[in-house]
Length: 57
Image (cartoon, rainbow, N blue to C red; front, side, top):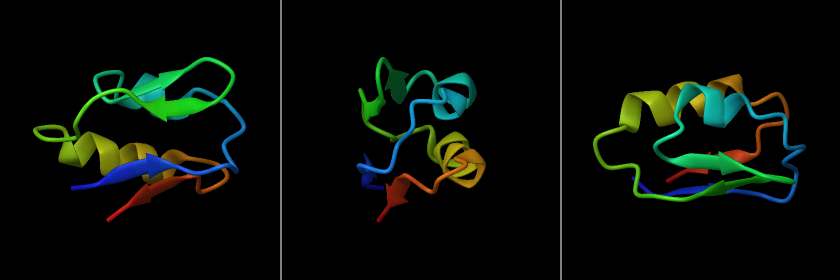
């Protein structure tokens, strides 16, 4: 699973609160670690993103 956060991120922190193992938010979110082993939580974070900034391939 390849995960990235695009430029539409508003830094709300939803992704980090759902999956802090993969996402980190300062001014905007970034992927800090591999999604391996956290696929379900990454998908949940992507679904929870209010602006659809998390892209999964």
